[in-house]
Image (cartoon, rainbow over all chains, first blue to last red; front, side, top):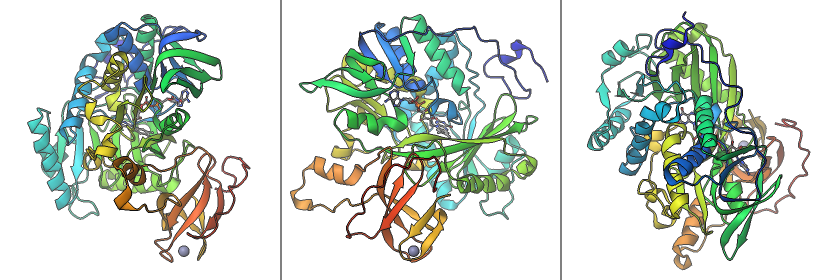
Length: 421
Length: 101
Ligand SMILES: Cc1cc2nc3c(=O)[nH]c(=O)nc-3n(C[C@H](O)[C@H](O)[C@H](O)COP(=O)(O)OP(=O)(O)OC[C@H]3O[C@@H](n4cnc5c(N)ncnc54)[C@H](O)[C@@H]3O)c2cc1C
Ligand SMILES: [Zn+2]
């Protein structure tokens, strides 16, 4: 085991060795009280809200802005997710925005001047049945047309890449093959939020924690500002980036959005020797696994069936996920569950995000990322910043507008996103 | 795991049920709807923080749909009732985390 910082260059981290993390400066962002007025405020200090603020300042020169977070930075889904990053989605619209995100990830640490342990260790998506193979291969060809790296692996090739996997045919969910995106991987989620927060704060953005938006000031159908527990704050433009709480925010502004909030759980094992150096996902058996930089196995489950804001789910969901994981990785039977937790994910009808304009002028929406938005953090911020700055969608989020539920132009990613990530 | 009171079979484990989201959404008259009214009927369901009247089906038991008051913050279970009957009053917030979940 090495403890030196120089083993931590992006891309190689944690592949074989456990890692420790560099010291943090005492303060990453300035702690401030809200001003009376801003050019724009972003509601929600998760990764997406912070990235939006950063790109508003960096790409659009808007620095008289604030991020308002009701709890603490990244206390929502940002620091609860299993950090899987990939771009091999089925439809052109999705492929375009997720691939833009992956490209941003590839230079993000240099851009922000902050380490995020982005590690392109590859993402393997298993197929367990004939129809699974068909739909994964369809996805693969769609990816090829969109210039996204994705390969088909036979069970033997899967076994070569992940020696601890069970490819026996004599199991409930045999491995019939897999798609593999070599450029996919993971990053350290809390550091991602901190990196965006620090870079935004350095550009003059106010980051205000413990500030809950409780209402919107709207005159002549135009947003004028927000009400908060710290008083009213005037704002020319407002972006709602509240993830699991997005439908509540929309209701406060007087309209409804097609979002249901559901628990999504994950868990970790204690620190183990490195046995897994890629990410393995299986939609069919509802499990996805990677081994984090320090050595803990990180596993995600499926969503619980019902609406909830409790940030916890049922243990039977975890048991189901672990049963599947153990069949795929018999070696895990000796590992223990160290910790489980849950987030509140904003599920949309077509498993695609909702981004863009709202029925209220100068009020913009970004939500519906559900179980899979961590990977999109940079691109989501990028297009949201554009949308807020220009008052119209960027070409990458045009198709994801709220009105697609009226026009019928849904972007159905249930196959690609499935349960997972 | 939730323990859900099926009005026909009594208290059973959540794994015997499927979820049906907001209860009491009336089927609209399709011929007179505008596109946005259709969209609302198809896609918009209540998603409150607190008590929600919602649908469940007891697929591993009697196979029947019913409605249930449940708290989305505490997972407390309120009264269950049959569709097309009078909806019991929204429960008071007893509000203790996990009290009856
Ligand atoms: C267990 C789990 C595993 C996941 N795994 C993956 C994965 O492997 N890969 C992947 O790509 N995605 C994954 N996701 C999804 C991903 O985490 C989310 O899509 C993403 O984090 C959403 O980003 P966000 O920054 O918008 O959300 P959040 O971090 O939830 O930010 C929203 C913020 O808004 C704040 N807020 C809400 N209401 C108000 C208000 N009224 N006033 C002020 N602030 C408010 C909240 O407190 C919160 O901090 C997973 C999620 C979970 C829960
Ligand atoms: Zn029953």
